Length: 173
Image (tube, rainbow, N blue to C red; front, side, top):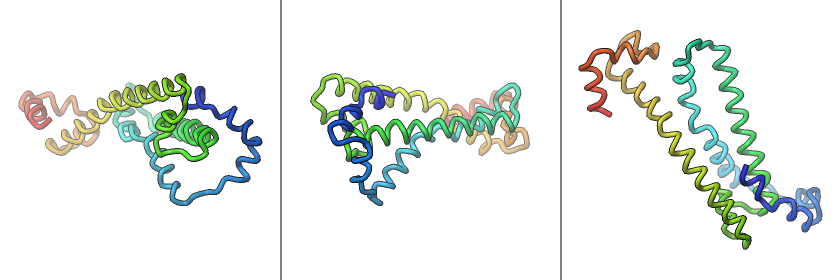
């Protein structure tokens, strides 16, 4: 949202003859497709925990899980592509892989401040993504060390009900 709000894309479009003129002069570069795919991939970094978290709900139903996961993936993809990709391109014409780095080139103090706020928000996202990843790793360790039906069904609490198993998991962790 910071990119969309503080990005100078409106003034850039007006200064360069309008949106249609800019799009007509744009040339697709095949090598930057991979950078774009990397950016889109970053939007889905925490989705691997969605299934384990969905199973821990009181009423985990496949229909609800599919609905929530689909909406989350679509929202992440749209926000990543629309906000960062389109607005970044319209403002800078040539963007770095990390759109926030482009804010350093702008002379306005507010733009630089917006870039720093964006960095802080990315840092917070990574900070809060760690517990979700830890949840997944913990489940993988339980399945790996304590094989059995209850383990594979995701019932970690019943598997770790014995003290020696909890101690083993803490030692491994």
